[in-house]
Length: 160
Image 1 (cartoon, helix red, strand yellow):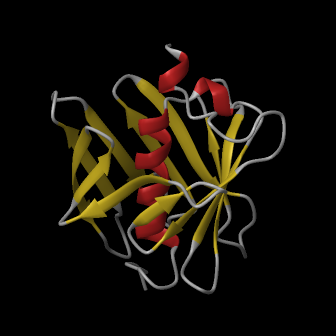
Image 2 (cartoon, rainbow, N blue to C red; image 1 turned 45 degrees about the vertical axis):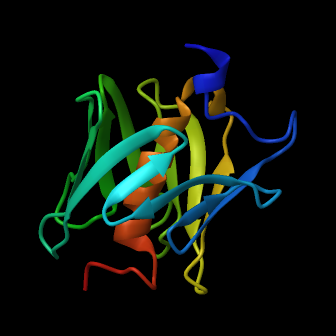
Image 3 (tube, rainbow, N blue to C red; image 1 turned 180 degrees about the vertical axis):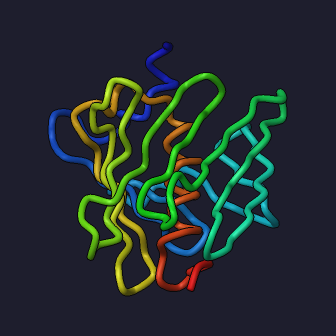
């Protein structure tokens, strides 16, 4: 994987944070990373058409890139506490860390934590890098975190 495609673009060596503020994703220096407009996730020249199916029994998010690559997030149990994702051929698990919290870990195929995602009462959603952040393509992380905004954010809440 090319270094420019890795999500580990946070400040060197330390813990980095991204924040979804509404439809805008910003890094810890308030530099724009991506945004969503009219169900299209835009990161630089890359575009993903987002389709989501909210519901109390089955939550799914599907995205199609302009090159045809598929990205999905699907509910794996009766609740949305465990979600499975696939970005092209790369699998991820998006699991809540506690049953009483909406905070999640994004785990890669090896089960290593790539990032932690924490919805805040303000409606912002924080994304903090984990030990395996450099193993995740940036576009994957942007899609995965937007999907978690859709399911977990108090302001954008899609499930009752």
